[in-house]
Amino acid sequence: MKDELRKDLRTVRWSAWLGWQMESNWTNPLLFLVYSIVKPVFGTFILVFMFVIILGDVATDPVLFSYMYVGNAFYMFVAQVMFGVAYVVQEDRERFKTLKQVYIAPISFFLYVIGRALSKMAVTALAVVITLVFGVVALDVAVDLAQTAWLMFAIGLLIGLACICTIGVALAGVTFLTARHSSGINEGIAGLFYLFCGVVYPITVLPQWAQSIGLAIPITYWLELMRRTLVPSMDFSEMSGLGEFSDLSILLLLTVTSMAFLLVSIGIFKYADHLARKKGKLDMNSTY
Amino acid sequence: MDWLLNLRAVKGRAYPRAVGGLREPSWMFFDTLLPLLGIAAFVFYYQALGAPEVFTGYVIIGGAMTAYWLNVLWSMATQFYWEKETGNLELYMMAPMSKMSVLAGMALGGMILTSVRAVSTIVLGVIIFQVEMDISSPGLLAAVFVTTLIALYGLGMLFSSLYMLWGRGAWHMSNLMQEPIYLVSGFYFPVREIGFYFALGAAIIPITLGLDAMRQLLFGDQTQGLLPVTTELALLLVSAVAFIVAAHFALKKMEYLGRKEGRLTMRWQ
Figure 1 (cartoon, chains in turn cyan, purple):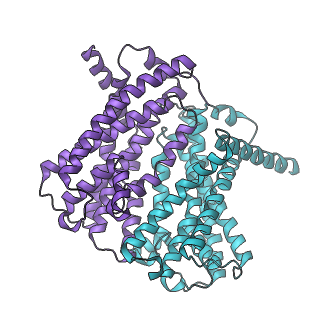
Figure 2 (figure 1 turned 135 degrees about the vertical axis):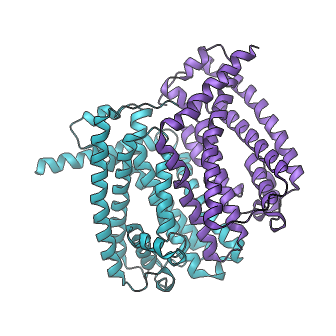
């Protein structure tokens, strides 16, 4: 048992290291940093521009602006990590053609993918921090670290990130079965969460049926918890549609829905893995 | 030049692109319905901000055009890099047709496949969000759209030539050219809002002018355009020719450099 655990941890550690090398060693660190940050930060700028075009100034509605800004900053994890994890299969299979070798190695492929996700998470964390710092300094986003409930924040952050990883693993499983243009799936699933989870607008803007979908997805609770803990001076409960829940209830809902998503993700990954082996798709190469 | 051979090369390269889509039916689902989710989120964001209804139309049109931009980045610009990784590039180099025919075939096939996504986005977007459009000059609208695509794919051909010798930086470059271009080209708002001269600079990307002209033609007086539509069309024509000519020379230069430095077959850099 102890040996198994040690072996699994070693798998995660080395695949994370491998992922980091693949992510970063193609250029010098400074350029890598620029490439890693520009994309998500510009994504935020688009939303800031849209806000300013319609309302004239970010100070017109500071609560809505902070709601949007913090939500979007943390959503970077969803977009980047989830996309990145799913891309691992495609990258190893069709680009480096190493999937077969990794797959038949005496390690858990599931944990290998998780390890690769960790390196993407580290890069994304940097972009999230920079976005938040820019928001606080230049746009008056009311992040207040002195008032932050750090324990709640840390637990929520960890559960949310774990959940994002497991959804990414499910998508990686689906990627086993699709051609190299699987980015459409990742983009679509990321869009699904963007739409239903109240990332940049409260879910109360959505029709009732769509709100119900949002309430079943852990990302909704995760983002709400991140906002409440980092921006305690603003009351988002009125607009978010989650005002009836205390912080602890939100954490509990996040945990329960994340567990459900974990089970579903493992199921999807295992089934897709089985199908890919059965249909001989593990070494598929779509050159068109 | 053997025109027949080159036309066959165009057809030959376009064919797998167009047919590849049909052989992966899941793409149709992923490429038509799923992108609409992200676009819908922008619509709801505007609604949360209390934006005028015309902004919903802007988002739908901009969202549809992202499909072409993504196709140009990932299936044109990075394609020769990808072909190099998969070992096809040397086959292209050995074949007797012009490499421009291969690029033209990729562009044609890409346009066909991407149009499915773009058209479905517009149709579904208009139906679901009840967007009102006034197509008073369909001929001009078609001319702007087609010219935008030619200029855009011309730019893609130019990128493809430049990316040919790159390593993993090519992938990252394309990644880098998504959100920043969405911002400066005004995919989700009228480009004039970012400032006249700044927007004029962004007009180097054909989709900036194309989107602006299409919005003016579809939403009439509600849209404050960057330039008059006919001026934008003329600029698009110029950029279409310029990009294709530049791609021709860039391709020759890069091919020469690649042969000289032995980088055409170098993989996994």
